[in-house]
Amino acid sequence: MPKVYIDKDVYTAAMERFDYVFTHFDNYYFSVSGGKDSSVMLQLAAQLARKYQKKFSVMYVDFEAQYQMTIDHIETLIQEVSDVLERWYWICLPISLRNAVSVIQPKWVCWNQQEKDIWVRDMPQNEWVIHEGNMPKEWTWFKYGMEFEQFILFFGNWFNQQHGGITACGIGIRSDESLNRFRTITNFSKITYCGNHWTTRVKIRNNDTNVYNFYPIYDWKTSDIWTAVSKFDLKFNQIYEQLYKNGVPLSEQRLCQPYGDDQRKSLDQFRALEYETWERVLQRVHGVNFGNIYCRTSVLGMIRTEKPVGMTWQEYTVFLLESLGLYVPELRDHYYSKIKAFFAWYEQKKGIPICEVRDEESKTLENSKKVASWRRIARALEHNDFWMKRLSFSQNQHDIKKLFELQQKYQHLKLIDAEVNDKDLRDLQEIINK
Image 1 (cartoon, rainbow, N blue to C red):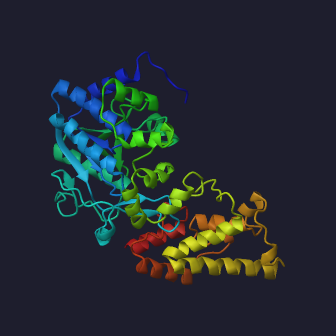
Image 2: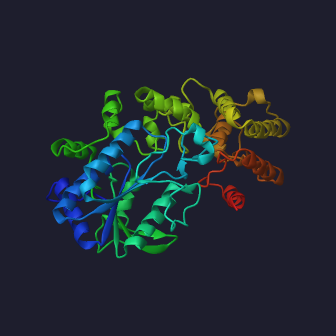
Image 3: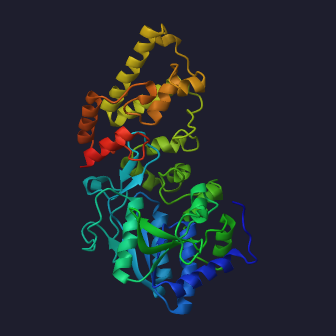
């Protein structure tokens, strides 16, 4: 879809959207992360709220393992909008978060009471904090380890039930940050509020709610954000200043979930900018140091991954196995036995001993499982392919039993990623959950 230009600047367009929301919706809250985009959105909204003598609420999900500067900035924002603030929901609940820096722990749970002794920070002590001990009684929908994406949907629906009418939820995403965010705005099949493309009706399990997300700064660029900060003297997270001084380009500065797919690009800055926080993070989230070393490569991704420079695919395979062994030696041994059987089959059936297996073969032959190579094995380990289907193995009762035993022993780890592209694993995870 080509860009559509309008005869006004992005600040004017954003303020018109805020004006529309405050005059057409019954109640409002904003979702903030402590990052630059949501901070600017919130402070601009406060300007217009004062004009209309309106009040709004704010939802902030505290991920526990974050920069201290982010927490300081959140406290500053509370003071900055206190005159138009109805309620600040500071969420400190055991929520499941994406961990893109670990092969064996694709998700981790923040504020997990069972791991309280290794929390990165103590539980915040202020009137706004919501934790397991003081949740609203209506939050029967909350479950331990609930996905972050699920939580924000159910929170919005609960907020609407408490306030009635039609609820607007402000989200500070910008469409130029990712293709998914661009699609959020340009999706023609979504339900909007009165045809405004910068709004989206929220659904829970395909059921419509009376909540609409709105994106007031969707058409802003990074330069627009910092121009607004300077021109209107807005408060901003000081960690950005430190990131910039440490050589991180503006386009790569991500704070929301430092272990997520995009945010991990700045993960190595934790060690340089907040060393004490980094020391605690090392003990808290599996794979963090691995992410610190390789976050500038694509080794941690699920698509178009590449081995670290200087390693052969064989060395990389051994490296992955050793890394797994640090946390779950039984899982390492499981993969080792599969790989050993894989090589034995090729030697017996094809006459190819392990010493003749090449580092790489034709990608077409590798993808069609017609040839053995060390790259093919490394790919299977990267994707946490428990059944080793990429090596032509299939699911069997022995492996199912083994996976159940591992899940029972290592309850603090989520050995199965619900997002993995394997129906057998997803079905098995549902059984384990039950």
